[in-house]
Amino acid sequence: MKIDILSLFPEMFTGVLSASMMHQAADRGIVDFAVTNFRDYTENKHNRVDDYPYGGGAGMVLTPQPIFDAVDAVTESAEQQPRVILLTPQGRPYQQADAEALSKEDHLIFICGHYEGYDERIRDHLITDEISIGDYVLTGGELGAMVVIDSVVRLLPGVLGNETSAVSDSFSNGLLEHPQYTRPANFRGFEVPEVLRSGNHAKIDEWRYRQSIKRTYERRPELLNKLSLDEQAKDWLEALKSND
Image 1 (cartoon, rainbow, N blue to C red):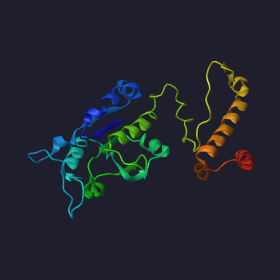
Image 2: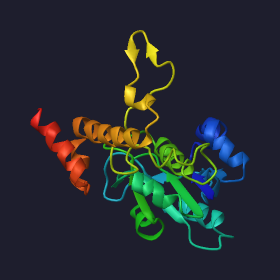
Image 3: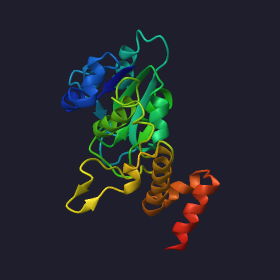
Image 4: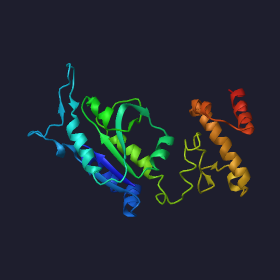
């Protein structure tokens, strides 16, 4: 996968892309990162990328020319149209299903904005996706891009040490992940559930599924409204509700 990032502060990505899973993915040739400062594409003598909004108002607006030209430059040799992603509080809320869809693409471009907003022509004629990582406002789109990129890259084949890890993550099946334990079996008198030490994988799978439903019901009950649960799961859920 090719990932291009357009940012006014490319140095923010240095640590993120050169450490941990991101570095390993790039080192193995699974993903190719490139960070471009779109200020380099300005055509005015002061290298300005923003201007006052038509109609007045507070703040400055990113001008279209540098961003359009930067996208043209990074897609010049592209064999097919990449997904061009705008990080913005106005975008659709980002979900695990979005990460899974983006992980199947060959080329992604992330545009990290600043100031009051973007010239609307960027939205109308350049991008394919508007994404929000939450109902709050950040100084710029860099942190949002890092979040999305991390969630996508970890799904690429060969990135995680255990390919089944991503399948059992929270939200991958619509539920929050079940509790996890490791050695020692008894720590300060707190014991690992006996079923997990039983070696009975059918019972372990059932326990984990039941715990996922319980944890989702307790912490994110609205997620259950989107799922088609089997009869056993419905019975477990009704039992939980009756104990409230």
